[in-house]
Image 1 (cartoon, rainbow, N blue to C red):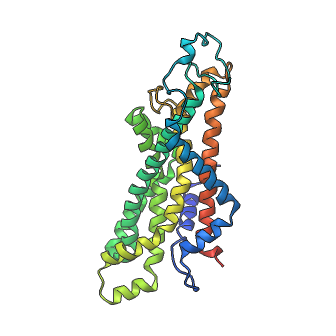
Image 2: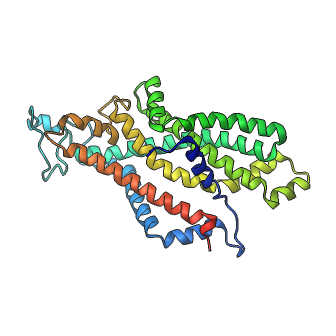
Image 3: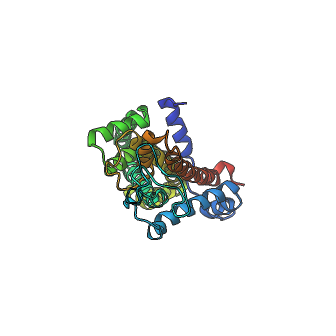
Length: 320
């Protein structure tokens, strides 16, 4: 179910309450959060999934039995019209429609999928943090002119939030042309409003803290207060959201590839592109679509489990 723009804003602003602060026992938020994560089964499962995914993405391409472009099935005469051989002892996932080893392509494709997710999230985080940081500092410490700057920036962010994320990503990708870089930019831009509103809300909350009032009364410049104190203490919800955004980034990148807006070079394996290529062979080898689809689902699940567990661990209202 699609949330209305107003509900989107309310949900994001609620997450901005996860501002970092020490509790009355002198235990930092991150220490307390790590302790709670260690006892959370969902966090452990998510961390294990992500550790395996990163290990496969980093080390796997050096260990695969065949290269991602080796059309071994065609050389052996096994690929014929209407026939794509299934798994065997040498090819655990069988061949794809061009006779390439499907298992090797899945392993190599993990690196491309990780690259898309990480880079697109970093793009959204960088731009969103810049807008949200300026807006939050202006609203919390900038006085009348600051409130005007904050209002202007947030109306722009609200316009982005009002658009369905997939529609916005498709529009950007169609405008820039099909490529892996385009997918990263499109998915990154979609996540900008979330990061911007989270950091803004957290900074406004921190701007009313006692340490900010004390620093202001001592004559410390407001720009220094914002950069050295308010921003670092406001990053907890943004970090949590970055983990959750990695999951949606992988899914949205796969969706763009499925629509033909991803990397046009099919020689470079990427799970979303592999899923799109398999559609015309569902009647012959449905497993060609099942393998990348399951990999995308499990990876996104890992990021989601860990992100939700981090959100709960960092939520001040749930701390004891």
